Length: 310
Ligand SMILES: C[S@@+](CC[C@H](N)C(=O)[O-])C[C@H]1O[C@@H](n2cnc3c(N)ncnc32)[C@H](O)[C@@H]1O
Image 1 (tube, helix red, strand yellow):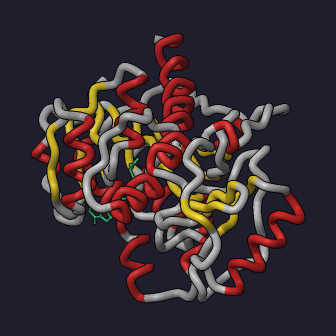
Image 2 (cartoon, rainbow, N blue to C red):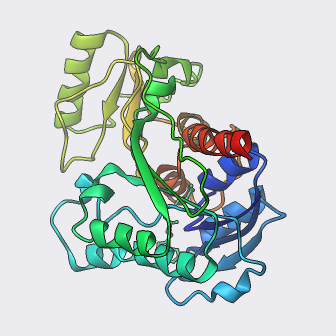
């Protein structure tokens, strides 16, 4: 099966697809740093660094069997804050997907996004566009922590096909053993002494964390502007990996941010996954990515059924 990865980013979707035996023939993204990362890890894929608005579908011939896409989620996510003009632009990236599906008519389309994508006022029209092209569509909203991963990540997975195969998607397990984020953290690296490093609000937050959890815990960190009272225990999954440094690992009287290998691991990437750019670029790529383990589960579920009925 030949796939194209649209909004390929660092390659969460592509890595999951390769694990399922799918050949990713083309990856498209407009951010050169993410393209460089994707290229370093998927050297046999062809890369196009360009906006998907105006991308020429004739670049992929013959047309792919599968389109993987995770259009920009910044216009949908609840974390976006006040509505701004560029949010509409970000949401419109989903139309590039339907335009290319229209041109290629692949057997399958699989889209990942924040769950709020389903609440987008143009989602019914987006979905109807696909139905008018002859696709049947199903979706599921899943959280990675329910599947034994050490961070929460709630995402919608939308599958569409114009074949007659049933669309089977993973279902939420009735009982899910929770993986502790502590298992992913390298406790041998305690970081720097806390004393003298943080402002009064963060110090108060850390103090409250000590009372609640003891010596080791996670402290969500937003800089001096938006300090939160919350701290998180390490004996359960942590919150979602974001596109910024977010979690301070408190280890006694030392602290550091979650490291790049830890963040990669929380997103299901192999620890030796290569990342280009600055540390901030790398965190953005990891935070943007499709959770590799979840992507793999979704694709396995869909395509094992296809093979069964073939
Ligand atoms: C949610 S991330 C994709 C993550 C990727 N699927 C992965 O698993 O690593 C969205 C990506 O789309 C890129 N992007 C946003 N708008 C774009 C556009 N108009 N054309 C091409 N790429 C775009 C962003 O730079 C970002 O890397």
